[in-house]
Length: 247
Image 1 (cartoon, rainbow, N blue to C red):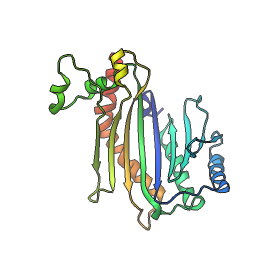
Image 2: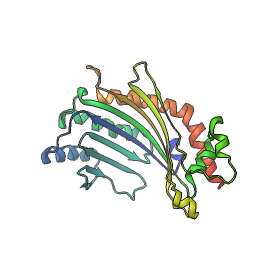
Image 3: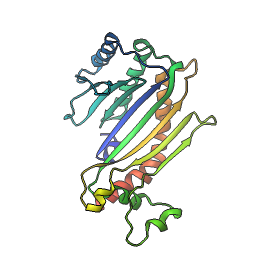
Image 4: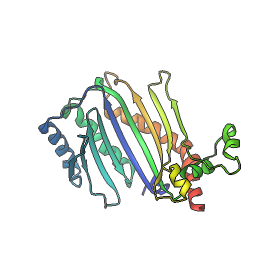
């Protein structure tokens, strides 16, 4: 298993392509697209429509890993939960991006935003926000407030977005998502919800005339993994895992 898979209870690599125009929704077009993806990944055999009208193709959930693909009115989403290697997920996303210009009529001009996201889930039965504050700190400006006698942290979801180019079209975002609510804290009764860490590199706007979606995803991936390895693993993921292990 890739080292990323050892950092959390679950690890996933997702791609989202948001389009300016609505995607085709004809029966023949939708089924033809999913059938083409299934030819490359036969284990993706579960096809269904959500209540909101989104179309989904996915593997069984009991394999220990799961590939999935969804079509929304203006978004194409591809994901792989617990891949053995990140390249497995990238190959899946690349296939999807190779197909969409021809099978869904999505040109490089139609790009609103393209995301490469790496996510990490940590199971923890307790006050998520308090744990995150302990593990990552609150910074000098807030630490006094967090240390008020008798106080309990109820909402702490650190988030930071940075621009990676002068035009601010390529951005990286780190978000820690907690799922504890005041009712649970008040009762002292917690469920096995997950603390999630999302690290996303996104390009906004249409692609250059000579660029392809697959090439652009490759650049976003390099940015994501370089920043993740340099800053996020040791300063966010490992401290969270260590704090949970000590509880």
